[in-house]
Image 1 (tube, rainbow, N blue to C red):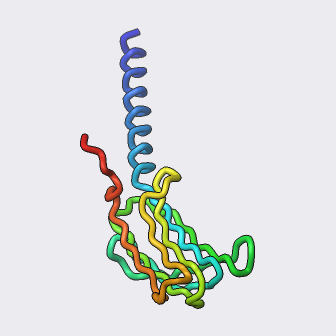
Image 2 (cartoon, one colour):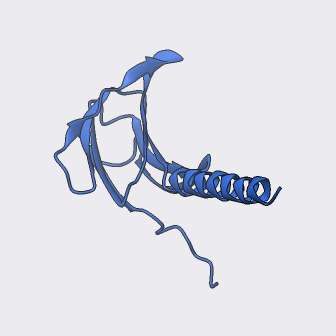
Length: 130
């Protein structure tokens, strides 16, 4: 009987430890979205200071609406830039955690800029005073 109790306690500890690890991974997930409305775009992103990878937007909804989306785990820093093809259009870069926008920037048709660059450091949106 004592051996059974010890086994149950050990199994419980392993399960709780596994669940704790899953919760940590989920908290480090960041989703990047780059959206072009009225334009195609090119650009790139760097994860944790690594080499830049190309943005590969896909058409969505209509030919003039393009989107790039990617999920990242274990992110400390994401550096993103996008260049719009048409200056009379809108371009946005957005970062999400837990399906909520935590950082974003955009340029619209009134801006003369064609390049949008945004860096996101994990946790920078945390404004709690705990």
